[in-house]
Image (cartoon, rainbow, N blue to C red; front, top):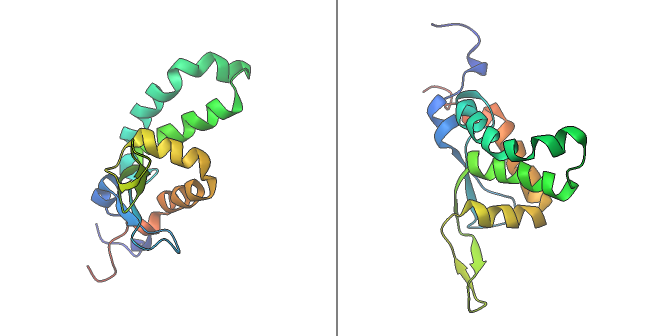
Length: 137
């Protein structure tokens, strides 16, 4: 249906399959990020249940360790919103930095240490403007 509300319309394929986010001042590094919300909500809610279910009682009664809770949040995000990366180097068994394929478990460890990067990627994934088609398409 045609309306004058097109500024709210997003591309559902982009929401689920992601858009590339390139952090400032990090040439050659980028992350494929699905939207936090919109058409990606079903996948996010399914994974949310798996991530949080084992910890429900501790979360309810407030006994969960804050670092563990942070790790659960980041893990959930890495499993549902970060789909790939390019240019990220990870230390191998020999102690050398090498280009690595995306691994959500490794990404959790990275984001636990680099909170500002986590915040930037979350901000990107929450912004519906990143998942719109270009004007005129």
